[in-house]
Image (tube, rainbow, N blue to C red; front, side, top):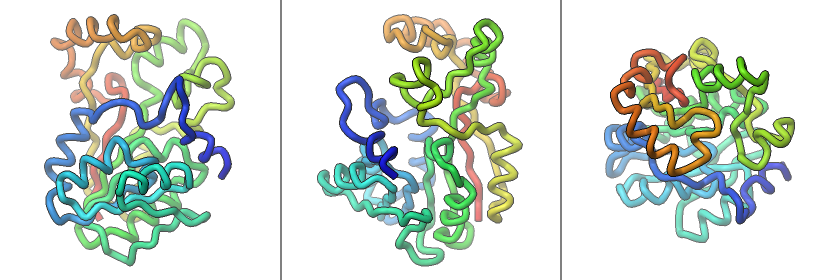
Length: 243
């Protein structure tokens, strides 16, 4: 568990909660996280990216994380967050939540099947599960691997290239794996939602803000590729499933 505590310790160089709300996340919140909806945020971290926004939307927000550091940070901002047990359980009762979130979490877990099973338990009938994981088969990463033989885990700039064996991402998923994982837990109506494609996501380019912004604009005519073929052209898999 100490690894996750270190991961959420404040760092002057990089933070896992950095970055704003992405287009797909905002659209899913608008549709499935309305006022009064009980929302389970599994692996919420310090709840900086999602928790505060969902509280502002007047949802019944229930965040859970394994890290004491992250939970204390969220509670310090007045957000309703609790600790997961050592075996990945929340304190919610069966069927208590109408919506469950698990964004950018499953790639960090040794037992993602345990997490998904707990989320399934916490959702009521016809409850909606919204999740996302990085796509290791994203075309820029295939391109980088072909040219350099290097597969970047992408969990943290501090480790992803310098010491990938210490990187925070330890699981890698394709669409078939995700579908099988969710079906095993009992989920149905599994839908994949791609992100806009951009050359700005290519290796090296994405690390230089001005260059990334330029290529994001230049790539707009090609952005539809991420929706058409997520396995090749979407850097992240967003998934909606129903209990």
